[in-house]
Length: 269
Figure 1 (spheres, helix red, strand yellow):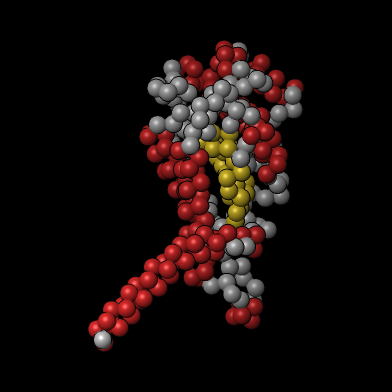
Figure 2 (cartoon, helix red, strand yellow):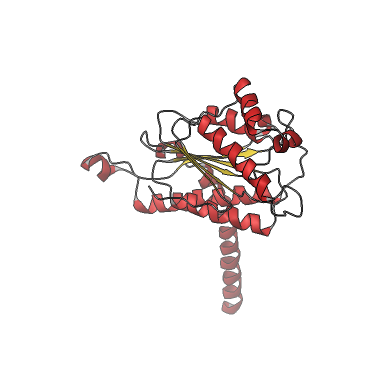
């Protein structure tokens, strides 16, 4: 009889353990959603804005470049910095905000306030891990769910989103993951590739679509390959034209510096 009761007890403990695991799995996402991310936004923190172009059929090489770039961007984030990730799609009106959160840190408040504060090193480390995982998962999920789009509205999206998301009072870095091949009703791909850059830049200025990048550092990566499924390398003449257009556009929009490459290189502050 004791053996039978012991067996039942063992089964009950096993069932309770499984139920605990299930409850933990459900509670973890709820805990992440319950974090007050605004508490981590510092007045002196930077704005970090990443544009993610989802109009291109990316292959494994592209995704490796993006993952490496994300790692570099995240590793350079300081406590109190705000990171925003917006998509570039077929229309600026369809741009999604994938992330808008601040990097966790404990702001100094004085001896007694710090002593009584619920902000601890362990809490900050846990919240950092949650944020980094969310950045990785949101970006990966968006690329994995890629749908071929007719247009790639890069110029208008960067212009309108920069006005929406950026404050002239904060130091800013803007990152763009894109092949930079514009093809939209505003600037069709044939015109973008064939017309003189001076004419295209005048069109942007005349339509008041210069981005508002007041003193921001601009970093563009993912450039150098065609937007077709074979992802062939661009002819050098075409690549140079694209680079010259975007270098001028970003500087005309107020960027303090512009670097455009296939791979991202972030200089530590």
